[in-house]
Length: 275
Image (cartoon, rainbow, N blue to C red; front, side, top):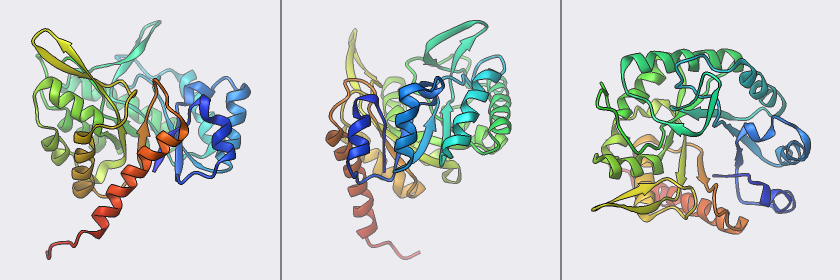
């Protein structure tokens, strides 16, 4: 089980023996060196790392920034993370860089473009990467396939893996009106290399309620249920608790990771039906 390494917890992470297997960081926060890079180096002496990017803009209608790739590759070479990842989304267009992970139309044209960027990224990194299913609040009328099919095809075309974010699936299923459990069933288990869990909030929108993926709350009960379903279907893979806003104390984050571990322990104790 893992949690995100955030600046308020740097010193405590170094001074405390945590019941965790690994920590995740956003590599963009460490491109500049300095104190952040120092704490990352010290943390790596105690824990494995996963580098989870937010700035590659894999879904852009343009190539991935070569400078961004070089900066990221430097961190890979130094810290030897067990996973590297980014999102099936876009955030750059020309000279504009947007502070958000924006949705893609799920079309063959869009799939071909993101596949080219994933292939280039893997070529530079000299390793397989994971791509996360995004959290979105609108869908395109011209979609030619469902998101779960899009993610499967991307993995098949490029050899990348899937970072399956269960909270994103749950939020989108509510907002777009589809079944989260069916989404998980459709994902090819062979491609899944990691899972994410996070909290969300509810917002009133006219006569309806939308869910917003804020990463600012504990994981909701229904998302824990979806995680249990995913583990039964896909198997055990590294699992991360994401909490990026209103960051609580370190013990709260570790407690959320303990809940995920308890689910795995429970599933191990359940007798398997004869095949």
